[in-house]
Image (tube, rainbow over all chains, first blue to last red; front, top):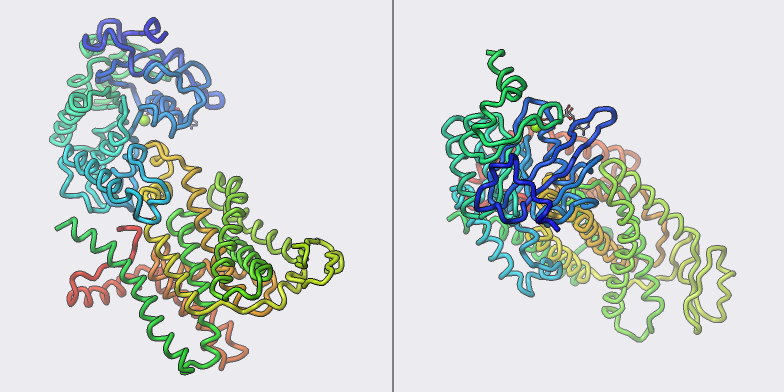
Length: 279
Length: 358
Ligand SMILES: Nc1ncnc2c1ncn2[C@@H]1O[C@H](COP(=O)(O)OP(=O)(O)O)[C@@H](O)[C@H]1O
Ligand SMILES: [Mg+2]
């Protein structure tokens, strides 16, 4: 059923070859949401391949974050459907869609800032660690094994982001860049099939951004999952995204490979053009 | 190095909590047995134990779950009266500790059931709304028990909402007599049992906080939206914490109720809920050792102030305000940190007793 729905996306040419014959991890069909009179997102149809790095770009207020909120069921769509791994996410809540395989980070970092770095990741591991309430309270019945497993897995993820030294620091006290990395580590801990990154490079210096680019590639290669990111840093987007979708005023104005997007007149006018004017 | 430091922090809180209680018991118990404690003080010991357990329990809701509950005395009340009824229904031949244990268990279960009933609608509310609804529930519980008549005879328990006569007791006795409350309660609560109950409450809460369940609860408090985004069932964990908190409060209630020969529902009113909240806030949200100390001092304070008779409550209120200001103002904090710093130089391993960071 999902096979014939496959929309190679963002444009016909760019689903990475390795993903072509597989169900997309994520599909949306005619997705839209209104806030009162305002149509924040409209007619959004796209698909993301199983191991694709996809970009979602557009000027401020275009509706990008709203798309992420729709995909994670923070908002219920007014129109359209979302298919995650071939299954509809209608009438699910945020917690349930996370279990179905979608994880995210936030434009304004949302860490458990009073908890330690390690505990933040452990919270991400919540659904993959078995520890019934009775063993939480009594510290018996497999408590030690489950705590060890969660600790080991969390440390492994922190090592992946070279954060193992900070494991016992309070999350809220970390430098900005490290907070962003921790948020990604926590999202990955939920074992998603696709991870959504909302402006991961915001506020980063060039060397941090370069490291982030490398990390995003490593996430895809190591965990074998799809990445979808919202980003204003064109250098980053054009370098690592295989498919790009451009939003303006809630509508898709272009989809394609970085090359296609760069040369698309609509995009230049709506997005890149404005920037040049500003300069 | 880091690993051991973190471990020691958690263990340190545990040692502080358990140690404090055990040392206090080791000092007080022999004194009590040798009649070295004045009647005034010894009469306070069991209530203090009950209130420490209440404060530990409320700290789970307020400090760790981060929800303001203003009806906690309601759970205490249900625990107290269930406990009293349990004891009244048991054969008088049974040893007192068995009866007390049964009363505490039943008190906890009944309060837990009530916690579930109240929790399901309440836990979906946020912030102020939750506080106000728990307040209302606390008052409802008080008023229901206030007009409840319960008696026991050969044929079992009799209930009435009208009057004691309506119970139609053949030969038995009245346990709960409406606004007069429970009368003729057998005073079987002991200081030893109180201390054991505190240790039990500490065991449950401290373990919980450092477990998967506890992390989920703390995560919800810290950032609800992020917690949802990593697949945590908000309702489930809020409800779990709320019910555990209610069960412990019910147990404290049973201990408290069985310490007096008469006990009325109006004892567990809004003021009592607020009093417990004050213990928690002053002791520090999420700070269990602090809660224990604050409860003990604040509960003793009015008694210590008896010599000031009429001005007692005034002085009490002023002390409260001063302590609040002192613990909250940034300058006082800097000052306190300096003092702590001096001690830290001497003893590097001494850390803050705040479990929420552990
Ligand atoms: N919950 C909401 N209620 C009303 N309007 C909203 C809400 N969320 C987003 N919007 C509006 O939707 C539009 C898109 O916002 P957003 O998705 O945050 O843009 P961006 O592309 O910068 O991430 C904006 O005009 C914003 O004001
Ligand atoms: Mg945005």
